[in-house]
Amino acid sequence: MNFSTNNAHLNQWVNQLFDLCKPDSIHLCDGSDDEYNILASLLVKTGTFIKLNEDKRPNSYYCQSDPTDVARVEDRTFICTDNPEDAGPTNNWMNPDEMKTKLTSLFNGCMKGRTMYVIPFSMGPLGSKISYTGVQITDSPYVVCSMKIMTRMGKEVMKFIEGSKFVKCLHSVGKPLNHGDKDAKWSCNEEKYIVHFPEEKSIWSFGSGYGGNALLGKKCFALRIASYLAKKEGWLAEHMLILAVTNPKGEKKYFAGAFPSACGKTNLAMLTSTIPGWNVETVGDDIAWMKFGDDGRLYAVNPETGFFGVAPGTSIDTNPNAMLSMRQNSIFTNVALTQGGDVWWEGMTKQEPDELINWLNHKWMPGVKERAAHPNSRYTVPAKQCPVMDPEWENPAGVPISVILFGGRREKTIPLVYEAFNWQHGTFLGSIIASEKTAAADGELGKLRHDPFAMLPFCGYNMADYFNHWLSIGKLTDAKKLPKIFSVNWFRKNSEGKYLWPGFGDNIRVLKWIFERIDDDAAAVESPIGYLPYPKALKVDDLDISPQDRDELFYIDKNEWLNETISIERFYSTFGNKIPNQLIEELGALKNRLSIL
Ligand code: GTP
Ligand code: SPV
Ligand code: MN
Image (cartoon, rainbow, N blue to C red):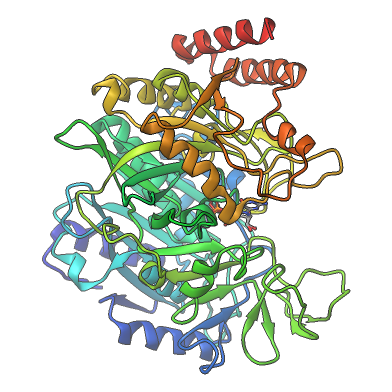
């Protein structure tokens, strides 16, 4: 094979992998609309895509994955560093040489009968100082189409791929086609490996075609590899949404927020305000790269260009901007197909359609036990189609961040909102996020687990070093220039198991209090865990919430919190003596404050 571009390093890498994977042909992606349309038509021909009704949802496709390939596979995800301590206790580790041997045998001949696509892409605006390029090799045209929506990719990017300074991303669904084999609707392999070599900036992903396992620019590169680079270079790569809040005076502030998978980032990022005069615009819904500007403030860019959003629960009531974003040019995976050639999922409309084809390709009617859409079914849409994108969302310099939110899905204990005393305490709040597990990753649903900074599955190095990195970031600038840190929880429930808080558009009430706290315009009361809104400062009296439930939203239950501290202590102990002293101090101080409650 003679793959030839102006970049000798790239040529050598691609040619070597061509020889290993043994595809039938190779295609260098130009990123054009024509190319996308040709690949989508090919996917229709092979049965992977069904074209949706052109009148209802122009240029959009429906896709069902294999039922065993529906989410990220955390127990098959590895960080391979020379020293196991550099991966840390929260990551799976294997010796890089052993892993390479294993992978080399898996990838040997794995693309037989298929085309090898080469995708040059940029995470972040082309040419921005904050951006980073990558090249993904894949044998999945579904992945190429998704990468076209989710990243800046193709010919334009080639100019920015210099020498060896790009992240090498190799992906295969792991299903070679022998001569005469018909391809499956969705190909994957039972054996899956999502492997990162941060020290050589490379990713090898085998066996899955779905989401974060296969779109390597997203979690693998923009979080796991980028967090490793960020630590070395003094910046932050975070699992955060970015939004702008504007008050009635026209003043704007940018917020970033880390919530674990399927815990509300996309919905908050596109929030439709229920308070007149207050407004939210979107910069990003999943990943934030933040660097200090010359003025000493943190600036964030969204490295992506699309949304890969959770479909179920998304409706014109809960998230109208997402619904408007997906009116055309979209891909829907593992939702249900209506008789009229459109899509549906649980929560999309109050009235359930009479008959559907569900994500398992079964006939579905209301009352049927099987779900219509898989809980981790997703829409893939271009960000530029979102009607509330902030005008600065592609600014290569990023947007200045005033607020950082940490949140999780907690039915108990954690109040609706509280404010950290300072950066160190805020870092502590990030480190103690725990959340009930969702369908975004394989595993037991609803199980409470520690997910510090919402980065548990995404930190490319030792999480204790990551905590230290956050503490050190707080020392790099004047304390006044640092974002203020808040904890939020939209998911607290009452004794009947009902959400106490309406959430979605009404989350603006919480954002408003936070906005006004930054300007010292909103009152707060000190509590053992942080500053809580002064009762009248957060407007809820016009909501349909009983006074009892309102109190419950902010109630600090001493016993629950003492149990929380025990659980934090146990979690911290998994890092041995690597856990920073400042966090141990914060935990001690919290215990002391709770003891006098
Ligand atoms: P990933 O894309 O997996 O990282 O998830 P995410 O953090 O973007 O979560 P998303 O906004 O997609 O929300 C996940 C689920 O939580 C969806 O079913 C939403 O409908 C639901 N959800 C989001 N925000 C709220 C809220 O404020 N209240 C309640 N009750 N549910 C919410
Ligand atoms: C998540 O799990 O946080 C997602 C979906 O956003 S995936 O891209 O599959 O990681
Ligand atoms: Mn999301």
